[in-house]
Amino acid sequence: MTGHIYRDVILEQHVRLFRGAMGAEFLFMDDNARPHRANIVDECLQSEDITRMDWPAYSPDLNPIEHHQLYVLFESASGYGLFRTTEFEEVAMFMPEVQGSILDISKFRSIVFLHAFHPFETVSEAFDNMQCIMKGKLHMDLHIFLENNVPKAKKGKQAVVLGVSDPALSMSITDTLDIACNTSGVVMEVIRGIRFHFPKLIKGYKDQATVERSQLGLSHHYARIKLKVKFDRLVPQTVDMSDQLAKDINTLGSRVRRWYSLHFPELSTIVPDVQSYVKCVKEIKNRKCMSENVADALQDIVNDSEKVQKIVEAARTSMGMDISEEDIENIENCIEQIFSLMKRRDETNDYLNSKMRQIAPNLSALIGEKVGAQLISQAGSLTSLAKFPSSTVQILGAQKSLFRTLKSKGCKDNFVALMKKTLIRRHLKGRSERYISNKCALAARIDCFRVIPTDEFGVQMSQQVQAYKIKKLGLRPELNEEMKAAVAAKKSLKRKLKKERRHKKKAVAEQNDVEMEETPSEQVSEQKKKKRKSKICKYSK
Image (cartoon, rainbow, N blue to C red; front, side, top):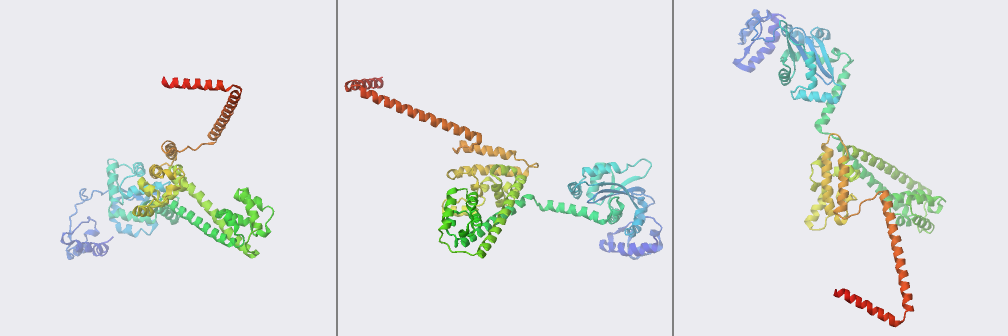
């Protein structure tokens, strides 16, 4: 550093611009280094009308960080790094050399040395630490790292100063650990050089790609947290996909029905279900050339021997037109597409059930995975469903039809999602809907805000609903196999006792008829009179 370089680089390019921006109140301060006190420097300051502040030699009041040891804290996505520099006086005096040595790793290593490094083990740990740093707070990991690695100043030796990039964080460190911090421009230049040569200063990092991967992972995790991308957003998309697959299956099934009805029109009336109809068409193919085992295959599909008999008889006497092998092949290709869609739909439903058990276990235990997924789909997300009151949950899926019926003063439509639950009976739908919607709102809030997911509350609510169904609604409880067997045995015993009483009463009546025939008519009349008198006496008493 010379007086000419100080004048041309520092004063002309930087100080003069600050003087013009701040005006006459600008006060310039530098130390008593020999290049700073050269004659050409004094002439330049006088020509630019720059007021210089007097600098007493080694004044601790004007330069409190003179002769201090500087440590620099560097925060990255990989961990915390603590670097030791040369004496602060040397670095401050040769600041242009620091700027020029940033691109040269050999020169930079002569100024900055790695003292300690604390790596992050997981992305969540890195995110928690970075979040505290952004807020200017001291995380516990950073607290322990600085407390164990920053040396304490001793009497008669150099004091320790910690260079930090964030002023708020430096205040937190000073208040908590009583460590003097500095956030000057020299510290920022040193941190810039550390960031540029970070993979070469830390052992274990081979290249820049390793650091970039950790930065990319942390940025993606931060973006997911800030954008609130939660896994419950997958449920509405899965429900829509399942509904679309069911719609495509019904569309292709109706097309196959119309197509095959030209050849076998009676089959559509015998088998109205679309899926069963398609499976029957695949087994029958040409009705005039049916195989011998077609009846067994149809029995597996329909599970009704009478329907199978009707199908076989109708195939023999059908009034449909003849069909060629090429037409049969086209129909079979369409049926294969339907089967593939059915397989995909079943896989989607299994995936949806597993996701619902993970995301909303209590809601699934209460009303089932399918109905719970439809409620989340109607609300948009589990968070939105948790914010809804029970009255809104009750009408999810039929908002427009509800207000339309209220306006027209008609009866309420049954298109709500809760109407698909078997616990709701049509003659008691109002009371049961209100009760179940209350439980669904509670279950959704538990699933949304509980840290550890569990279905214990949903099971208890389901038992409460069953008890409510028995006591309040007057419906019979669902029985298990043992209870069903016990009830069947009790009913058979009742039927047996009733049958025995009937036979006994019939035998007594026959015996009385025989006695009446044997006794004369006068004795019968006297007996009747005695019975009448005994009845009259009873009533008079």
